[in-house]
Each structure stands twice: as structure tokens, then as C-alpha cells.
Length: 413
Image 1 (cartoon, helix red, strand yellow):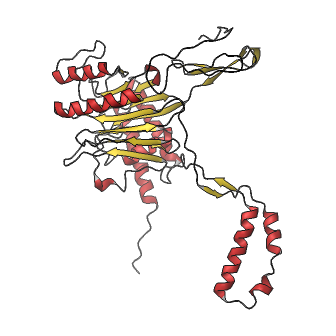
Image 2 (tube, one colour):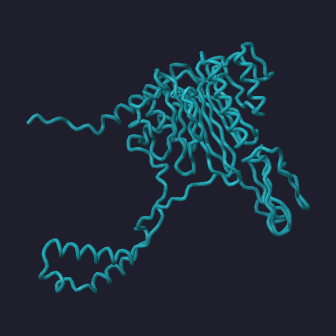
Image 3 (tube, rainbow, N blue to C red):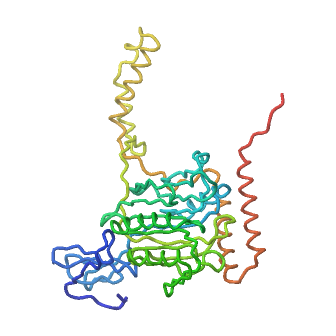
């Protein structure tokens, strides 16, 4: 749809394809039997109101309104070990407010259980068994309803997450395929992928270590790469990354079974000193936000005058005069809580998402922003490699000062 194009008459739309979950076109009837529909390629939703017509820049000619299509802000990275990058990841997530973060090569094991989680996010992970390296993880914002689709085959380094959505759930997966993986394990993963893509709108990201594939012509030299292409075609998947993700090789991929499901794919930036480029993208769809069931006192809307009046009516002196300490405390507590129930309303507990940790202060956020700016300049040939390393060194100094700021001097007395 172009900005100067006027839409008149009833609009009829048709759902395209038979993929469950998010569809390229979505319809809903109104009182005039006309439809609301979405153009996913432009990320706009057009909604017709009961009065016929189009709204343009606040001027009422005919009544159709444009509003942004809901989206999840996502990023994928091959970390090449999270052991020294946890702080970088946490700072990036709080700075950019990502909804989903997918990670390959976490190198985590049971000893990282205490440090792997990030406040405000739900962590799903699969660690490599019985040997070092590998592993994958997905962090999903606590604002959304999500659950793991579990598979028992531990040989496959993949994790699948089900995101609840209004128009059908979305499956988000991340996979790491080692370069020397056997064809038997490959087939076990292809079976997972087939089952998921037939049941959900699917987004799969990961590092598959198949650099010989030419995605422009769907051709490959090695037998394992050709078998991977065959699986992609059998499940009607599309690959959306067109730029190299490690030096000149395209290793990081985004595979979807509906092209309209993912947009705004960007390659660039590193997590710490990883030699893999990160991939940022958006998942388009009306996801279901989680409604908290935890009730708490709303001290922003109390009636303190009522609270005082209720307490003034209690005969404190007569009641507490001949009572013991424990009995008096019990009575006092009971009456105060009773008055509190009447004077302070209840509310549902809000999400803590967006509350960054104490060490992530304003100076460090500015350094992170400057580092990304210098990296983009360097990527375009407008800054030297020394400039980029200088911004990294400044960030490291600030992180070190923040980690020692709370240390107290020892006392030898």
C-alpha cells in the first residue's frame, strides 16, 4: 500500500498457505462485513472502523487507521564461551530491551547454574554432555508466556521454545551443529525440525557449520550440506541471512516456514571477543503477554485518612493495660493489618523487566553506546581498528571500577 493510495469499498482478504500459527494475512469482521488486514512486509496493520472511510494524518475523509504491527525484538549470537561474556550479554540485553536472545556455543555445564540466569528473563538451555564446549540457550522476556518443547535426544544440541500468541503459537529454536557431527545425529535433528515446522509457525536460528552452501542457488559441494538443503526444502523453509557471519563464511542462519514471520534482519557486532557476527531480527506477531497472578498492596493509592480514623477508634490503653508483651504485640498487629486491608487497595505485581542491575550505571551504558557507534564506523571504513579497541578498553576500565566500587577497606585492628 502506498501513502497516497485511497482504499474504497469493502476489503476482502484471504489467508495464504496452510502453515499453522502466524499467517501472512489476518482478517477480522466488523459491523459492515469488511476486514482488518495486515501487510507484514511493511509492518503495518490497516483497521477499518464502523464508519466507512480513510483517516490520513488526522483528517477524516474515509475511516481507515494505520498502526504498527506487534513484534518481538530478537538477537542471535555464537558466543564461543559465555564464561567471560556474561556481563557483556546482560548489559546488551538491558540496553537494547531484547525480547528473545538465542545463544550458540555457551560452553556451560552444571557449574554455571548459579550465574547463567538474567533478571527479567526466563532461561532455557541445553548443555553439551560429557565433553567440553558447545551448548545452546534461549532467554525469553518474562513478559511473555513461554515453555520448552522437550526432546530427550541429548546428542542434538538444540532447544525449542513455544511462544504463546493470539493467532497461533510460534516455535523459536536455536541449534549448534559441530563441524564433525555424524549423519546419524543430523538425521535426529532433521526429525525434530520436521515435527516442529508441521505444527507451529517456526523460527530457527543457529550455527550449522556448512560454509560450502550457496544459498543464492541452493547448491553445495559436500554430501552433508546437500542433505541439509534437502531437509530445508522438504519442510518448505526459507533462509533469510545473506551476509557472512564469520569472516567470509555464512555460518549463522535464520530459517522460517513463513517469510512474513521475520523482518528487519541485520548482521553486525560481536559479543565480547567472539569472532562471530551477531544477527538481530524481529518476529512479527501478536504474542500473548503473561498476566501476573501475584497480588500486592498498592501503596501509591492508600487512604491514610481512613487508616488514621480506624486506628483512632481502637481503645489501645484499655485493651493493652493488663496484657503481656507477646499478647499485646499480637493484638496490635492484628488491628493494624485489619485497618490496612480497608485503607490500602490491592494490585497485581508488575514485571521487573527493564530494571537494570546496580553495576550497569549511566557511564557504562554510554560506553556501550559509544563502542557500538565506533564499531559501525569501523565497519564502514570510517574509523581505525585502534579506535574500536580504544572504546573496548574504556568499557573494560569502567566495568572494573564498578566491580571494585563496593569493596570496603580491610581493618587490621
